[in-house]
Image (tube, rainbow, N blue to C red; front, side, top):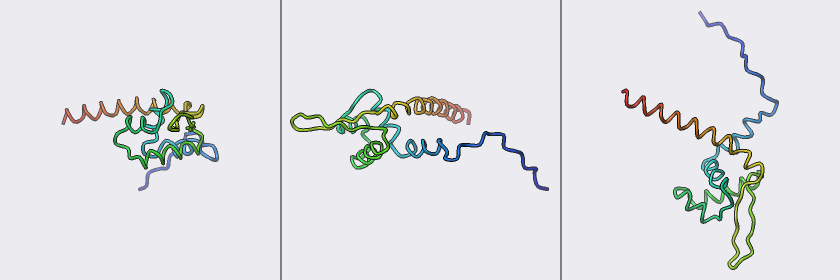
Amino acid sequence: MALKLRKNRAKNPPPTCAVGTCMQVLGKAWTPNVIWYLSAGPRRFGELRHDMPLISAKMLSERLRDLESRGVVERCVVPNSPPSAEYGLTELGFELMPAIEAIVAVGKRLKERMGQAAEAA
């Protein structure tokens, strides 16, 4: 005998789901890390590479270009010798920080819980 299908009580998402749009940005590899490090202020490419030693230069430049095209990061050319560029968060980029901080907080609790489960086993 099949179980009775219960009615979904969650509100219907908007026609173009905002959560999906946000996750298209945050869901890519290294994106939350890039936003995290830029939240403290503008950084040059080499400084970001130093902050995230495991990311390749190709991946970092891809992420920065993608975030710039979405309006999350802005690139500012610094007119010195030799010329360099700094990357910083836009207003929209700073708006993502509370979501990233919430994900970090839940991640910490999940790690603690997994650690407790491993100790109990």
